[in-house]
Image (cartoon, rainbow, N blue to C red; front, side, top):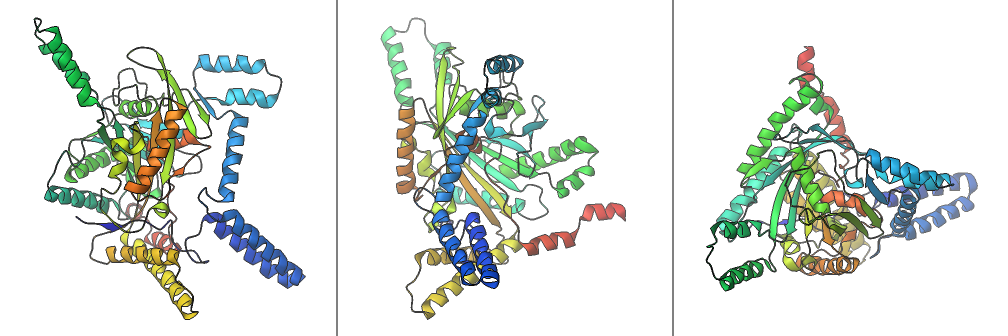
Length: 541
């Protein structure tokens, strides 16, 4: 079975050595400027100011088990701001809800208290901020249109699949499945592809025995002994006890780039051209997923996507059941706490009120132990004991990097890590474990990306959301998930996205959220400019 090195690296090397966070790079750059300019204009006083600033930057940005001081301060500031503006609550917008909020605000004297009450009533939940629909027609693939604040606009389509492997499969079947998915990624990676990212979502939940019970009702002998009927009911209950089923969804992401706009213009004017282009792209993606051994594949309608989102907020709802679903009602009433996102809704079968708490963590390469891994390295997170048996969603976002650019980045990282190792050795210093690990990972990337291999680069990030009925159950599930991640998956630390858990929940919804596009190199941007836009140039000629 093929394996790859995926852990140990959080980004490419900075000019200060190693992989530095953005606050560290900005802080050290400012320190250098202050020191140089200070010496020029103020002498030793300016140099002292630069040294003091450097010490402050070091202690503020150095990562610890609980993150850096800068990160902790930012989380506290974010939480204080959310409570002040009322965005720690979400009330789905309706005329009735808005009128009620206005009436409640009218009773308050302070303007900030009024703003807090009105701020809770919004059209979109935090996890789906800026989301609308390019095509929300029934029985057609739902094309979501996203304009999240501060990010590039994009379209997304979700595809429900039956999964690559079902039950015990041969090693040949597993290898064919791996190769098929790798070929799918390779086809999407070149710069001419309009698809620039995929999200792989796995939903883990207890089995639904309704079909088994319905079969019994249809085939039950009216004269069957009561003890036999009760015995079969016990069989169903024991069969479902301790077992879980998985639902797989692949979400494709099309950024609304200049290349997309130009290509869509060939299919028609305005949004009609977008829809015509997306019809072709969706058909191509469905064929690619089937070729990648994903089993039965179908594009979800807008109502199907929202039905899954509502199910993830309230697991008492059945997944992908679209009856009564409005594609423009994306969220349920909720209340955030520091380390959780609590949703209040009703059980569709009983009509009783139910409350579900959710908590989301981020999985990054920096917190994954470096070493060869199989494609099933995170399988332990999907098993029953991973989060105390609770329902959960696991999502991995993939952003594609064309092979040429990925090779340049890998080569640069190898050169800088090797240079750092040689410099230490020449000074007689001991080896640095962090640099040794990143060098090993960079060399593995370089070997995978050699010309002729057919491989391209990828940025990835994982998110996992766990759900429970009470705060005690959610806390226990969090603890068990951390243990499973460390012992079973080699994940040294889960980064809990506390202080904005409502928005974090959206990272595991089938809408391709949670991954900020990587920054291309200056050389790649120059080459893109030199390449121009071939289709537009043909039209002008």
